[in-house]
Length: 359
Image (tube, rainbow, N blue to C red; front, side):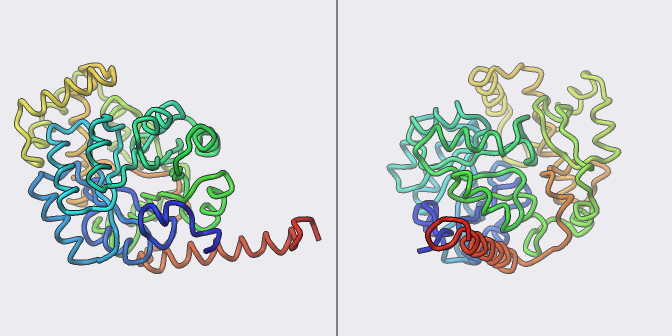
């Protein structure tokens, strides 16, 4: 037992308090299994998969690792309950959510033996899901990639740690052992990273896209709502600049085409997509125009992350992309993070002395 053995190690059944987040078109079986084999928690991203594809991905991940792993679900998906039943039947260790799941879905998963970990961006959201029975929360600050808020991790993290009595996992701005130690100092039980795991050898993202990330500086990201009406942090490209300059009508027309592509991608019917949009509108107050805009995201992410065409797609990213310069294997990455964290903790202990006072 060391300072790096935290409550989420026991909760998830993993060796290290490091989580690889579920990233659409990025977090497939190979990356997920490699993370779990290295002692962290790998998470499959299922939002851009059909139900059948998710079942196959779980089976493939199970073939590649005997370690615990998770699946990220969309709480507002029309078949969310069916997917939850799949996780229970397949004895998947963890269900993570980008949007807060309903209380009955949390209860169902927990009764089925699945650990439930929603991602949140504010204290009140953490308090809500904790009251509903969530086992832990991932709190992402504004430095994070994809959908993100305006409050920095260093501000929102201690707020959430002080507000709930379940483990809190810090996300947004983490990529090394220094960040892990800092998160622990704030009271977190570990860190979750997306961009850092995207830039590994097991990530299936095309090499041309990885090189775009590696060449980015800390000033090469932009937060915009032009994609789906909700602020997202993306790598800045000529394409994202054009998105931001498009008029609302152009965005809506593009979104209608993207909705058709999403239907084919996930196997969802038009009525199911319509119900999903209306549920989002009713539950979260998202205007109907923004619901249609949200159809942009999967098709444009796929253009970059799968097809390798950044000129026609978008690349979600955290600000840490500007600090990352290599493409390690997941095992090497986690070993480096843990090694650096242990060295820092040892140095801090030598400074404070055995009795806790300065030497």
